[in-house]
Structures are given as C-alpha cells and as structure tokens.
Image (cartoon, rainbow, N blue to C red; front, side):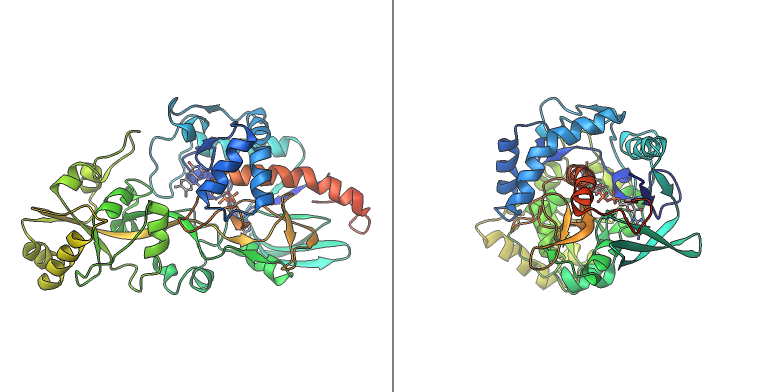
Length: 439
Ligand SMILES: Cc1cc2nc3c(=O)[nH]c(=O)nc-3n(C[C@H](O)[C@H](O)[C@H](O)COP(=O)(O)OP(=O)(O)OC[C@H]3O[C@@H](n4cnc5c(N)ncnc54)[C@H](O)[C@@H]3O)c2cc1C
C-alpha cells in the first residue's frame, strides 16, 4: 500500500507522549507475552469489567505478536526488573527518570519512536512532519484529510485513514465537557500534542464515543506548573492516598480512592482543583514519602531538594498560619480525618505539600471495534476510518480508574489496524477513485 503519516511534530519521532514515556510495555500491569487468558483476566479485573469484551480479547490475543513485531523493527526491549511483572518488557536504554516534556535522545522511549519513523521511511512510507491535521471529510469512496503544513493548508486523499493523535488531554474545551467542569485546570502530565483532533474529526463524521469521563494520571506537586524538575516524578500519590487532602481554607476533602489514578479522577472534579494540599505527619513523610523500590525520585527528599513547595510546622496552628489556612478549619479537618475509621491517623509535627491532579491521558475516546475500525453510535463501522491508541476508547476505565497500559494499547491496536486495512479495502473492492490506494 501507499502510506502517508501526517505528524504535527517537527522532528522524526513526532511530538507525542510515547517519546516522553517510561517505556514500560505492559497490559494491565502484566507482561505482554503472558498467555492471552491471563491478560484477559487482568484487563477485566483492572477495569472492573468495564473494558469492552471484544477489545479486551483483541488486546489479550495480539499482545505477544505486537510485542514481537516491535522488537523486529529493531527496538531494544529488555527487562527493567526481573521480579516486577509490568517491568519485564521495557524499551532500552531504560529511562530512570523523566524531566518535564524534555526529550531524552539517549533513552529507549525516545529512540524507539524515532526508530519506527526511520523503519517506516525505509519501507517507502511518506512522513510529512510539521503537518497539523485539522480536517476530515468523506470524498468519493474514501477520505480527504486536511492539514496545515508549515503554514500552508493542504489536502491528502486516502482510501483509509487511521487516527492516532493520542487523546484530548490538551484540549481544555473537551476536558471540561467530558471529564469535569474544571478538568482543564488540572496539570497536563503529558505531551502538549494531543489536542483532541482525532475525536473531534471522528465525531464530526458520525462516529460514536465511549468512556469519556475518565483519565489516567498521577498526583503531582503544584510546583510542576513552573518547575519541570517536579514532574513526571516524584509522584505524590502515596502521600495523597494516606494523608489528609485539604482545600485553600484547610477544609478536609474526603476521598475514598484506593490508588493514585482513582484519586486523580476524584480530585479532578473538585471545584478548586488548583487549591489542594496534602497534610501528613513525620511517620508518613518517612514511609509513604520515601517509598519507591525502583529508584525513581521520591517526595522526601527529592521534591524538597528540587524546590517543590513544602511546609512544615510543629502544630496545626503553625501549619495553617504558614499556609494561609484557617487554623480552626485545619484542626477540625485533622480531627475528622483521624475519626474516620478508614484513614491513617495523623499526629505530632505536620508537613504539607501543594498538589494537583496530573492528566497523562484521557481514557475514553472514539468507539472502535477489535480491528480498530471506527464505529458509529449504533456499532456499525465507518468504512475506511480507523483509530488506535489514546484517541480510542472502550479499553481503559472502570470505577477504580483501571489502566491497561498506554504504549501496549497503542501498539496492539495500531498493529491490528495495519492488518485490517488492506483486507477491509480488498473486500470492499476499493482503491478506485483515489488512484493510489493511499492509507
Ligand atoms: C511521562 C509519561 C510516562 C509514561 N509512561 C508510560 C509507560 O511507561 N508505559 C506505558 O504503557 N505508557 C506510558 N505513558 C503513556 C503513553 O505514552 C501513551 O499512552 C501512548 O504514548 C499513547 O500513544 P499514542 O500513539 O496514542 O499517542 P502519542 O504517543 O501521544 O502520539 C500521538 C502522535 O500524534 C501527533 N499528533 C497529535 N495531534 C496531531 C494533529 N492534529 N496532527 C498531526 N499529528 C498530531 C503527536 O505529535 C504524536 O506524535 C506515559 C506517558 C507520559 C506522558
């Protein structure tokens, strides 16, 4: 087939989150070469049954093959830890830490995506860089994709189009519409490239959407808005899960979250998403604050050393004064927290961090089937339109914010789309009218 990639980034490898990622290839925290039935159970358990059954089955069934294909492109995949299942496959050289949105050319995730671009170009794929896709319409038996390429608006025609723009985490309007009224005020813990073009264009052309309300992410220091050294690590999830979350006045924000992703999904709906802090004591600072078995930076001491906003005081009155909170409110909040039978009690010297939910990717998105074909709201495929990765929905989610992997999902459904497109076009007898069978 004749294939064209339209990529908004100006350099090979694009500008997506894959390049910034930690490069861990897992399906619902299991190695991608686990038996399909083990993976299927893990996906359904992680999402509390919310993952679409056909998508879950496809992810489980194709995972090993997609992983092998990835390796065959020359991507170096090695265990990052022999004991931890989700670290069995990681692109090498492993990325020990990240720093904001800075590309790390010497690390595996950056190298892997650039290598895919190179491998594609070697096989005759036309890669158009600095091409910001902004339109999609049916034309003839296929599609016309509009893109602004270096300031010039251009049209590309194709029999089939695969949307793969990563999601809508950097689209404030879609975040407030689908995730929560102030979700656009959360921290973007990802590439800025994913502005929801894919879902917008799919919906405009009659696609359905699924699971739009949830995001994958982690709690981060509010200092991350100004300081790249504070994200994506150290994450502050563990302190937030065990400590006391308060608002700008020191009032308790009670949560029931069991994990960081669930907590992000709860707090992203708080009316003052940028006004939150976590309060904890010496014991939590020495345990949850230092807890990381894999050598990634931790709040204590890395967050403080990197200049993250941090306060400490001998008692609630002192902490409230230093934080600009109401002392009586804070005392009442601590009392309520300690009376709650589900919490870890706070006592003695107090510490506080300003925190914010960070969005790594939107979990919901375009409705697709197991072949990555875009579906209309009634479940019928839109001929010649495909979606894979962060822009497609239906595989992540559930009440506890079930995450089944970002890279693996993109890899598997991109791989499946690649297998489906020629077969679908053949069976539809298409190709005529576009004089080249572009896809
Ligand atoms: C800090 C961080 C760490 C992570 N760590 C992991 C990890 O260890 N394991 C894991 O599984 N997942 C991880 N993820 C998540 C993972 O990176 C994503 O889920 C995955 O990259 C999604 O793949 P994608 O191809 O859908 O989107 P992306 O990788 O974001 O790629 C989308 C591409 O589309 C381009 N694009 C967007 N809009 C347009 C447009 N309008 N026109 C043209 N091009 C456009 C972008 O420039 C980009 O190149 C991490 C993410 C981050 C941010």
